[in-house]
Structures are given as structure tokens and as C-alpha cells.
Image 1: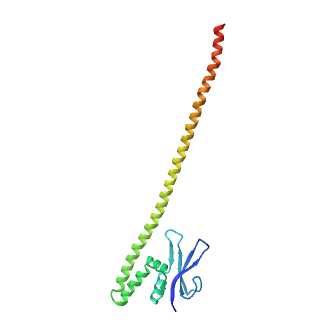
Image 2 (image 1 turned 135 degrees about the vertical axis):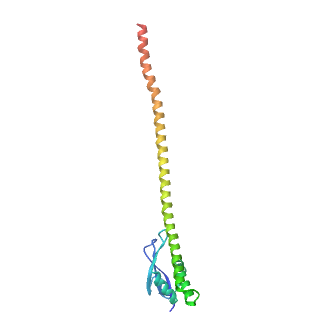
Image 3 (image 1 turned 45 degrees about the horizontal axis):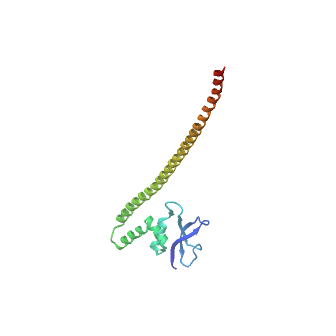
Length: 180
């Protein structure tokens, strides 16, 4: 029986989530499977990959063939590197303690890199939010200044008309006093 490690789709339309499963290669994509290893959510940034690495490693050592997408996930999480090191131990090229040490070192570096990406994404999102807020504040201040200038211009236009009206009212009163 040819065994594959592949994705089985679930979730609603345009909100797909996937189960990482071990299945017979002849069974349908979302059909019968042997064992569920974990889940994959491509909608988050970075994509969320949760699976049991030990079970995946066991299945790989038994001969299960991962699909291209699952192979990329296994490589991303270091399962394929662990298999590579284990094959070196089996052949006698390196010792088990050396293989474990190399895998542990690789895992620490990879986790630091993943965490760095997460913080960069969060920082970039926060920076974009601050820039948008600053742009909105600038636009609001520009609108407020334009409104102040418009009101000042309207007040200036009303002021000369108001000054002319009292002068006109005073002029006839002065002329009557002169005539008397």
C-alpha cells in the first residue's frame, strides 16, 4: 500500500483550513485517512502549522511520501533535516549525540528566525497604523485651517460693510447740525 502524507481540506468557502493526514494514496483527498498528524492554516501571517513532528518523523522513516506542500512544511519545521541526520546515524557516518546536537542547534536558530518574522510583521503593522493616524491628523488639521481661513475671510468681508453703515448714518446727522 502506497502511503502519502498530505493535506485534507476543511473549513468554509474562502476560509480553508487543512488537516495534515497520513492516507492511502488511492483514497480521495478529503476521504479516509490512517492518522491525523496536525493542522495547517494558510490564512494567518505567517501561516500556522501545528503537527506532531515525532509522528511525522516515524511515518517518514516507515516510507510515507509527503506531497510537495507537506514536504515544504516538514522541511520548514525540520522533520526532513532530522530524517537526514538519522539516516547518517544508521549508516554510521555520525553518532546519535552529534545528530541530536545538530538538530537542536538548527531548531533554536529556526525558532529565533520565525519569532523575528512574527515581531517584524507586528512592528510593520503598528508602524503602518501610526503613519495612517499621522496622515489623518494632517488632513484634519488642513481642513480645520481652511475652515478658519474661510471664516476669517467671511468676517473680513462683513466688517467693511458694517463699518460703512454707521458712517452713512452719522453723515446725515452732521449735515443737519450744520444747516441749523
